Length: 154
Image (cartoon, rainbow, N blue to C red):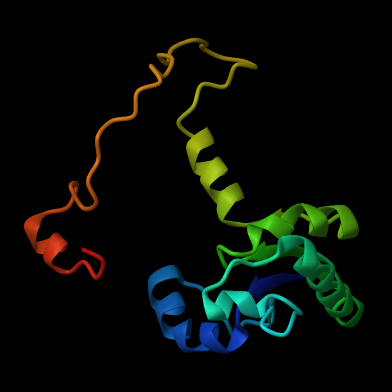
């Protein structure tokens, strides 16, 4: 079985392979992974240009591209959307292909759910309701002076 990894641009993911292997234990050259870039999907070039992506325009192209990949790689069992520009297409891919799709949103949901009360069973109502007031925050306030000095966006 294999996993399809969609990225904004497959050429820019390649140079990151040493970082991914050394820090995440992820070998991009492993046969279990099929990596495909979306750089040639009509309208998705807006990402490279730093422009807003027209999701309605791009969705059929993403689905078409994945359909072609699945026809050539029938052992694909799941899809990972590596790029933060790709979560808007997750539902279209789930609906079209019936495969599980993970993205930055599902990862964040998973992380958050590990700290939230599960109302279906166990101890309930142990967390306080949010008071609706957002705490004040300034970029980097949680970092040490040494860490702040390394910030690129100050």
